[in-house]
Length: 462
Image 1 (spheres, rainbow, N blue to C red):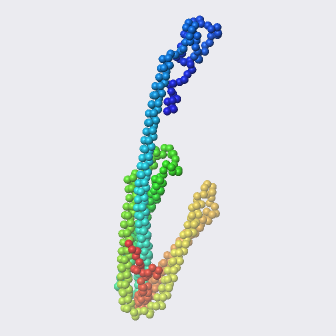
Image 2: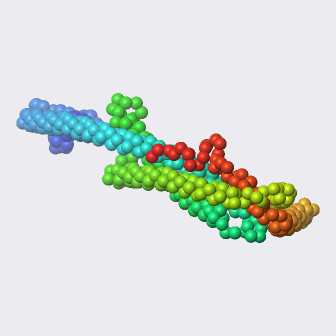
Image 3: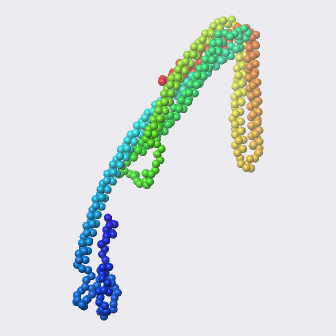
């Protein structure tokens, strides 16, 4: 409005205006007042007309009235325009305020709905995460029990193989393919089959745990993002015009860094939950398979174990007369076998102990090869390291040769022991093997005193 008043057509001017008649036309020709003529026409002056003996003015009364009416009309027009402008401005203020309030209320409402949606899906994710964590713990417990059972099968297998090995020491006519030998072979086969089944189930459990943890990781990541978004949107939902921390951010409305729409946003979370539910169902089925595998293997191993013991008892009763003649020779021969086995273990340990020095020497050589320029010097250290590697390699070769000779010696000892046993009563030898070597290990079923027999191990509930 100030613009209009600043450019008003009504301008107060000096008395000499463009409407003032030319001075030359007012003054008579040749008129002189006795004073020096002036050229200043900046002010309206009155001139004495000697012809009429009166003052001569520049404007008429009509001009004066017309000027006043023109000012009245201009004032009315400008005031009317100003009134209309004020009315339009007030209406614009009310409309924009109403529209702004409605839009802000709509945004606040949508923020509240968004916070509720985020809170709902966050709770769904949290519940599914807890269910998945429980399932992972259950599966880990089943896997631990299965691993323990798998390890516990090594002892019965070792005993069965040892029994077969001991019975191979029989000589002469007693080297018969009797029911004991068939039962022991069947026991070894059954235990190995059980181990293979357990191993496959363990591999599946290990893979399933990876899938469960991957699904749980995705849900935890999604829940964390939703927790952050829930906190942010809830804070924005509580934000008001009088809140602290609000300010201008020019151009922010043109920034679009979104990567999803409501449909894909919901679909993403639903897919994570569905994936978790699918993996949980697979994990529950796998736990059932683990329990079934444990029970089946336990029953099979227990049955074959009893059958082998019964066969041994029958065979012992048949070979009772051959017990005393074999005792001394068996003890000495078995002691040497035991010492040779220890010697072999010692040699293997010695070979294994050479790995660390070899790694150190080769690592030193490898790192020193990374020296630059003239520093790549074939100094005494380099030559010593090379010599050290060669010496360790030669030591390992020598130890392996001794190990090979020791293994050959062990086999020869076993053969010598069999030859010695052949010189004694065959029946005594067979009875000693069956009653002491074999049945001595099989008096009680192999068990871990901290856990109990493999067949009585507590199983986790599905």
